[in-house]
Image 1 (spheres, protein in one colour):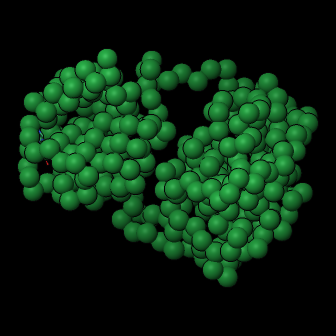
Image 2: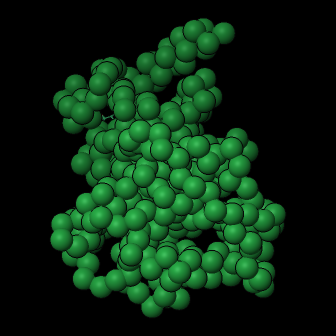
Length: 320
Ligand SMILES: Cc1cc2nc3c(=O)[nH]c(=O)nc-3n(C[C@H](O)[C@H](O)[C@H](O)COP(=O)(O)OP(=O)(O)OC[C@H]3O[C@@H](n4cnc5c(N)ncnc54)[C@H](O)[C@@H]3O)c2cc1C
């Protein structure tokens, strides 16, 4: 009996891979099951030491030039067969868009239970999962009775924790003979230089307070000065000022950067649901009563059109 962690990569291991490993480690400790992981990609190479400290016994590495990009046809049979071989009772991965598709496909092939978009997992005489339902209005607690089960974890809800530096054994496996009916040739980013929100270390977000799409350049300049990704509140998205891919919150992305700068955002509970785990929160808002000031580390009461350009200028000076 074991727990199997799906290590998501995009060239390099994604942070969500370490989050899944952290969650898997806690389950393994509480349940007494062995913890293993599977890597599918071009080469694990010098990233293997990053998998130390989670208590993973073995990392099964399927490496091949054709495995760089996710391919359902190729990836799913690998995990199905490995899960059977290891008698995996819990398979845990990421609820990224790719991860959700992958988890659902593996669950179908194993004919097993699937819990998508979990925000918490723990072991209490069996697997328990907390997950939002009804567009996040309710958090449901699921007691999993069957096995195996596949759980996908929402990115940025688990703080990565390592205990010690014990390294897993890396077991390199031959790529099984599978037909590559569909091959991803290229992944095009939304715009050149765009930083993926869920992976960004710094995020500058704008809300209704930016007044209209013509004002994004004010925030974009701060993003450029800091090397930050651009986020948005739902009002900004629903107003058609920016695409949904930028939305932070309960019905957008959950982010966990080192620094989150909220500009012209009131800090509604649904927005907080997506950025509360940020390490440092800075708020710029002209209303001193805005709820965002209750959860921020640094608050600036003022007009963002005065404050943000000043911040950008000072950061440029400090960096030059
Ligand atoms: C089921 C559900 C799901 C939701 N999901 C999300 C979600 O994923 N993400 C999300 O963000 N929201 C979500 N919402 C909406 C949420 O409730 C709020 O309506 C939304 O977050 C408010 O966006 P905002 O802060 O941009 O706008 P507002 O609440 O209108 O706040 C604008 C703020 O800008 C300030 N301001 C105005 N002009 C300036 C200026 N020149 N300089 C400085 N400050 C200024 C104002 O003082 C105000 O505080 C959801 C709601 C529901 C019901």
